[in-house]
Length: 89
Image (tube, rainbow, N blue to C red; front, side):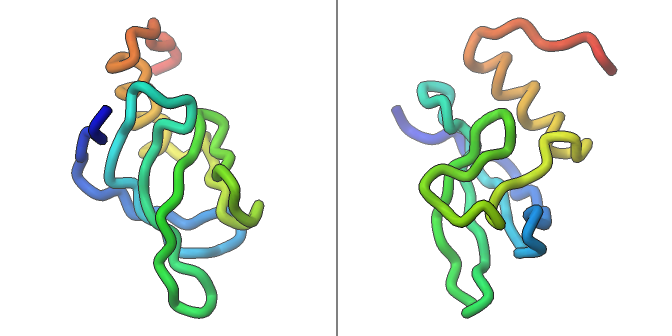
């Protein structure tokens, strides 16, 4: 399925790298789509799951799902995937 594009969300990974979430793929468990800027200034395409784990990448590319903006995009993605949103807000 095609990625649903969203307005970019600029974040910092747990390893201190600049990153951006700019899409959601509701058909994949690693549904957050974006890029991470590595220390050598390369932007790599990545995917994260709802726990913030970055698929097939250095653990420093993981993100914190406790960040408010990331929480919001995860909840929105869950709605797109037909999952019941949490009522924690």
